[in-house]
Each structure stands twice: as C-alpha cells, then as structure tokens.
Image 1: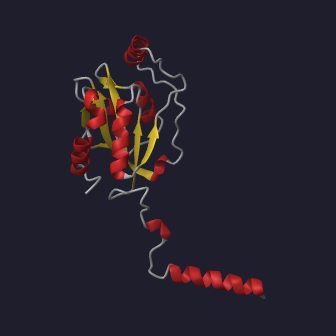
Image 2: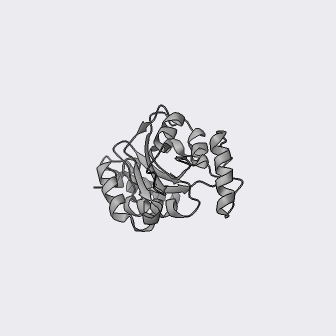
Image 3: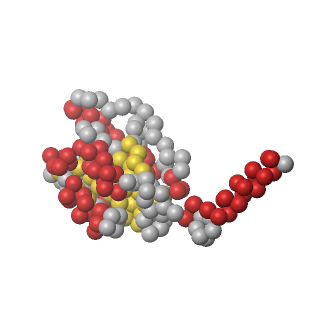
Length: 196
C-alpha cells in the first residue's frame, strides 16, 4: 500500500511539473544552444593551435558543443615533415583515418567547421571528417586560420565533399591574430545569426 501511494505521488508530481504543455525535449538546454532549426556543433582540426584558439573562442561565445578532429596517425611536430605529408595527401586526395567520430551527428542541423589552410586548401583531416557523414540538408559554417591566403580554396573544397549542404558565410582569421580575434569572431557570429 505504501508503494502504491509513493507511485501515485510521483505520478501526480510529474503531471503537475508538465502542466504548462511544454515537454523537456522542446526546451533548448543552455549548454547546447539551438539555431532556428536545431543544435549546432563546432568541429575543427588544428595542428599549431591557431584553429583551436578560434574554435574555443567560438565555443565561449555560443556555448555550442565542440569536437576536435584527431587523426589515427598523428602529424609530426616538425614543420617540414608536416608540409611534406600534407602536400602528398592534398595532391593525391588522401583522406587520413580519424580517431574522432560523432555518433549523434544527426542531432545537429548546423556544423561550424574549422580548418587551417594548407597549400591553399582544406586540411585533409577535415575533408576526412566531412566525407564520413551524410550531411545532406545541414548548414555548414566554415572558418579557417591562414598565413595570408584567406579562405583560398577551402570553401569550394567543402562544397565538393558536401554538395547537398547549405554553406553559410565563412570567416578567415590570420594565424598571427588567432588568439586575439574575439571581436571579429563575435561580429561574424552575429552576422550569421548564431548569437544576438
């Protein structure tokens, strides 16, 4: 009898707490902001730390979930070795295997995708990541860090891998400014409607 009374009390409490007609699923949680259509994920690759710095600033400003792309075979910390490997991967369209996987990718309607610019192109690990998923109908918001080239061919590279995604306005941050770009990042996020 005591068990039945406790169950009835729990049931009554749950009915009262949902009496406003809004289910818990309909309320955006503060740590996972939504765009007009759904949740947003920041996903990025960084070798030197510059793209990571920009990604972290975006995360601070938006509160979105964030994932760093990691490769199975890490890149060397020696610059000349990295550039040699990167050129081989870029010239031969080699997509390195990744450790990173996002099991719940379908929950996200918008991906903020960050890459360093390597030889005027999208870094191969980012291409690997984008090719792993069906991103049809999703919004992709590109950002990059660069040594003077701006976005170069990176946005077109994304379009080639994700032809059925909507590509929004990109952001290019000079590598030398990556750690001090908060104002530019904030303006960009407002322009594309991810913050007010």
